Length: 139
Image 1 (tube, rainbow, N blue to C red):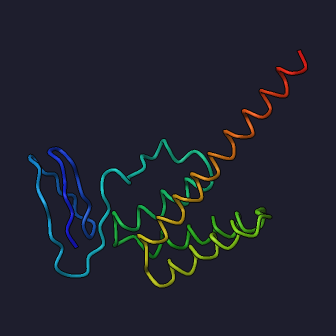
Image 2 (image 1 turned 120 degrees about the vertical axis):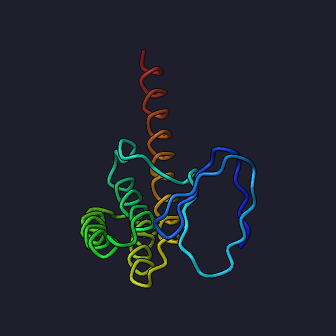
């Protein structure tokens, strides 16, 4: 796998952090777990349950030594979400995250979690616009 990084960009590889001072291309020749800086969520950004799931999965990639303990927390969070989520497609995605974590496919689990929280945010924005339009039509 070939990865291109810009000057100043970081990449997390098997828990180690690499920073580059110029534009480089890395070729990963064996099976490694990595996370690009652009996919890293800061702790203060984990403001919703789905974002907290994403953040916790991210931590398994950044700190592989803590992956087992973190996974236990993620399963608890996913159970809580499954207890309240009613929409079938979203439930399937939450269950898919569990399966991906069980098979240690953390990056794929992260991708599914990112899609879920982004769709949740898009839905909230749509609801907010609809409520605002309804309010403005009444005035």
